[in-house]
Image 1 (cartoon, rainbow, N blue to C red):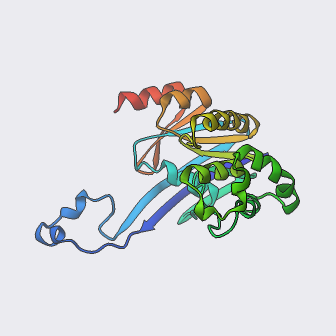
Image 2 (image 1 turned 180 degrees about the vertical axis):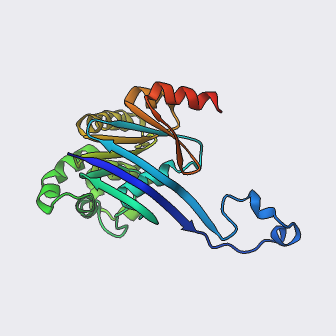
Image 3 (image 1 turned 45 degrees about the horizontal axis):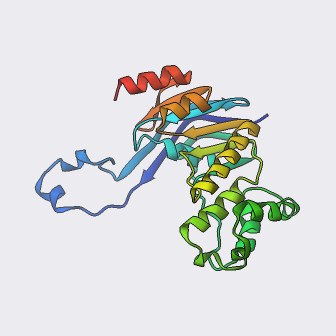
Length: 243
């Protein structure tokens, strides 16, 4: 059984900043900043959340609400400042696609390295390499160092590898743009397949339609806190009524 469990969890960033002329000439001007006077940002504030098998969770809220930070914490990119984080299950993260790529190495080498980083075994990723290559449609370009790839080619490779691993927990941050229109159609089909086979999905989105269509649960976040948790139709309606 897969699970995401966060208990009394806080994530606080320490921000280094230089004093500006405005701070010196206008006392109290720092109150207009997003961080506290001691230079900290409380990105996630006393968060309690449990997501179990079968749940498709949408995360909505304004920019800076802590949505993407929540995904990164679940993925293990950030460690909580305090509180408990329990995540049981193989994770596939569809954000930060460039993470784990070696720019001086070939496309083939990066398929292998990225697959290992995503939790696949050496034998498992080797067995998938030809399928990943075919899906990417990069052909002989896979023999080149990826530093010579165009942005579209790089995204094709990253997407193809990231979606080759069959996850227990799928983390999505908005819609993944994966190159030209023809490839995007194929990528969208692959994404829906991953959603279907994953045990848990967490989707960060600004699209209320996507939240209702793809998910069976929704949380509304603001300032690192969960304001509402419930059926997507109810939560998205409440959110839109408060914009």
